[in-house]
Structures are given as C-alpha cells and as structure tokens.
Image 1 (spheres, one colour):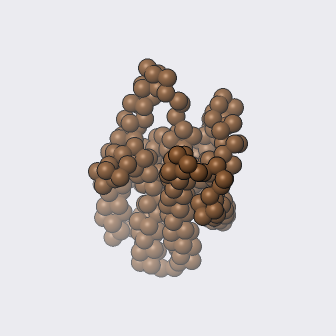
Image 2 (tube, rainbow, N blue to C red):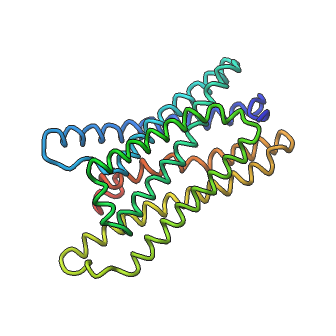
Image 3 (tube, helix red, strand yellow):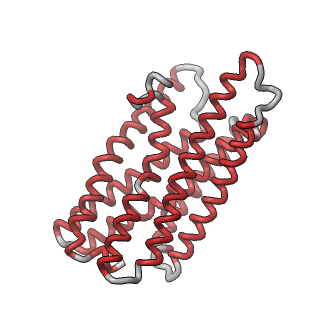
Length: 272
C-alpha cells in the first residue's frame, strides 16, 4: 500500500493512530481491571467461573493492547521518518484484524448456543466446555501470529475477504436464530423465570446484532477500499482513511458490551 507512506498523508494517519491510543488504551485497561477484580472475587468466594464471552473479551482486549503498541510505533516511525519502525508498527496493528474477527465469531456462537441450545450450552460450562474454549482461544492466537506470513502472500486481500464473508455468514445465522427464538418464546419461559429468561435473550440478541452491524460496516468499506486501492495516490489515501475510521467500531464493540453488562458505563448504570 504505497499511499500509506506518502508525506502529505502522514498527519492524517498519525491523528488516527493517536485517536486509537487515547480511546483504546484506557478502555482496555478498565476491562482488564474489572476482569482482575472478578477473578479475585471468584477465588475468595464460591462464585461461578467467568463466562465464555467474558473470556473472549479479555483475550481480545489483550490483543488490542498489541495494536495500541503498534499504533505507538507507527507514530514514532512517522515522527522519526523511520520506515522500519513504521513497518513493524503497521504489522502489530494490522494483525489484530484477524483476532477481532475470530473473537467476534466465537462470541456470537456462544450467545447462539446459550439461547437456541441451552441444554448443550449448560453442558459446556464445565471442564469440557472450558477446555474447548481454551483450545479455541489458543487457535485464534496462533492465527494471529501466523498471519504475519499471510500479509506477505500475494493474494492476502482475497483471503481477508473470504474470512470476512465467512464471519458474516456465521454471525448472520446466529442473529437470525436468536431473533427467531426471541419472537417465539419456549414453553419453559413462564412464571417467575420469564423475566430472567427474557433478559438473557435480549442480552444475547443485542450482543450478536451489535457485532453483525460492525461486520457489515467492515465488509462494505473493505470492499470499497479494495476496488479503489490501485487508483491514484489521493484516492488511495482517502479510501484508506475512510476504511480505517469505519473499521474502528469493530475494536470497541466487545469491550463496550462488556462494560455495559458490568454496569460501568455511566449511561447504562441505572438500566443495568
């Protein structure tokens, strides 16, 4: 992407990198701090272990911290006019895209099982489910590091687009399935448990649809960027900046949903 390294665009990209650092760094630290508090409470009491979706969020936040480090390297690379530092920073930041995508998929599948197949989901909350979850998380981290070689592959844009389409198919299927169950409540959702079950369904529904929204946005802008990236420098710079900014919500959705569930966000404390 030659247009990324033109001097006229340095200020625009540096502004974007600094914005990511200022927004993501405190957000990630807050999520990890709350996660550490919960872990300490679980050790000192008989509370149940963390949910699978929270575990996915913690690992995604840890991965986002590597992208923040990459953004900092990018800023230093621009200020120092050092191509190698900028190149390394871009790799740290860009690799997070793969981890985000798979953690979004895993979160949606977890919510789908909780609502559509509750019996299977309950059976996966024990050691067997934790083992499957840890293996899945390990695979995502392996893909994250393995993507370093993929980025130098000649057809990596095609692979990225196929991964994006796959994620949209999975998340769309989970969304429609949860919506179907939400519209048609089951026979066990009567009496005193109805409100609790409905809240659980709504939480899963909002989570999946929020992820679907950012994936649809990401798919649209990625397609536009792919179509214009081979054009002249100005169009490349503009399309790349638009893609960067419109892909930013995909980094925020899981941490913000976590803080919403925890009642930390000031705008949702009363509702929670």
